[in-house]
Length: 249
Ligand code: ADE
Image (cartoon, rainbow, N blue to C red; front, side, top):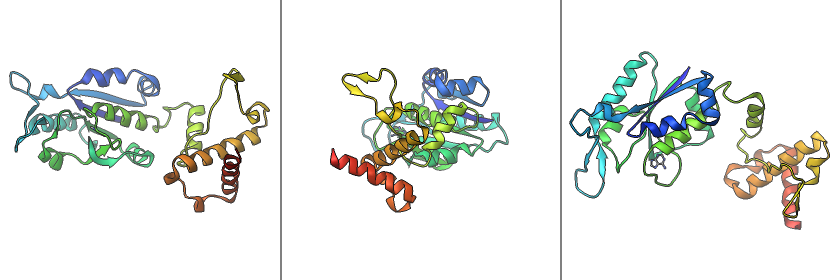
């Protein structure tokens, strides 16, 4: 079973996150397990110090080598033989996307470092960390929210975590397209009607409309995700229809 440990100075933050939604259900159903590891348990001085001033000066503290190294070794020992990658959440890392998530799910687990302060002693990263992962080009105050993003994205790719309906839906846009718009009752709200095609019960038409929306939205909002040349003839024609509708409006 896939197992992740998150090394953090805020274990309660991770633990409460693990109770909710798809991830919480997956854990309760025994499809994956996640533990928060309190870094301060590996700091042995009176104040349980995990950080110190930066060499070279400047503001901000740096996370010390020893507590992190001891935590990683203890976690590796606990799951001996399981060859898990050590991941450090960091804006300096490779940016997370769906393909990267799918690669990580193939491993049998992860040890995730969620750092605070200005950073982690570089020697720890060099000697103990296999991969640094960023969740985007912005700076968070700590690695915990990033670790939660990673765990959520990984959990939903583990077989059985999503129900049949949810996985079927997921498959339909695993091909890297943005999702289509969704509507629920009432039929008219704030003077806006639900698109007629969704009301007529013609499933072929509905499928076509949804595909067209996915292609169109991706092409307009995220042209970097779509390469028109690689589209099937049918997709090309749906995308052309979408763009013509847009221009004619
Ligand atoms: N820690 C701080 N900022 C981060 C980011 N953008 N991604 C991952 N970890 C982080």
